[in-house]
Image 1 (tube, helix red, strand yellow):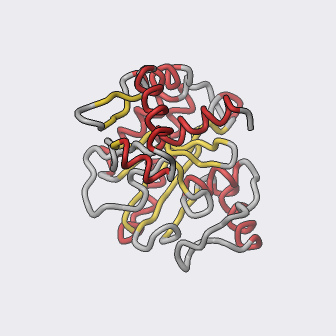
Image 2 (cartoon, rainbow, N blue to C red; image 1 turned 120 degrees about the vertical axis):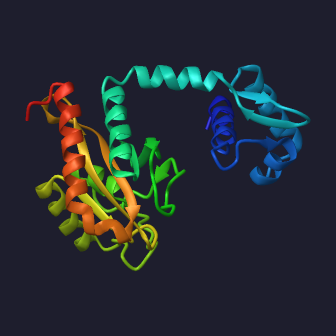
Length: 245
């Protein structure tokens, strides 16, 4: 690894530690968490702050900087499907009172790029704040991997007794997903949390993202009506993007 690559990787590790649960870090806290000397982390923070990616607030405390908002706006603006899919996600949340989200397949990772909690009622569900989701244990992950014809991930962690961790079971599940055009998960990531997901397709039927709902397992009795709502929303987005399949 070159020095430049190592420097960029170190900066990314620092930025990824900031999330909705931990919006601020101190220099000493970051150094302890990363297991690095304070002087090394201080240099990284100085560089990130100078570039606007971090901002110093108060004595030795740091938050994400506004420049990240500019970069994220540019990213979303470069994706023609994002705006209509995001609108559909918001409508689903309001109509179902559930956590709705958009996920993409990035290499071997399933990333939750947007979520909405508007109008949601009921108890919390697993993964409300996670950016990277376990691909083999979530509805969106299983859907995206199945449609991409990917095998069971090598490090398939058994989160619960319902998690799929055997290749033969995975093959059966993914064939079913491709036939039905949607994916379900039930108590596979966390007991008490289930999920539903359908593909968002663009022109020529290419899979762009997964549109999903996360819900308490107790509400899975209504999964058929929720799937209809998901399929309708995804079809509307696809039509906007030129998918006439």
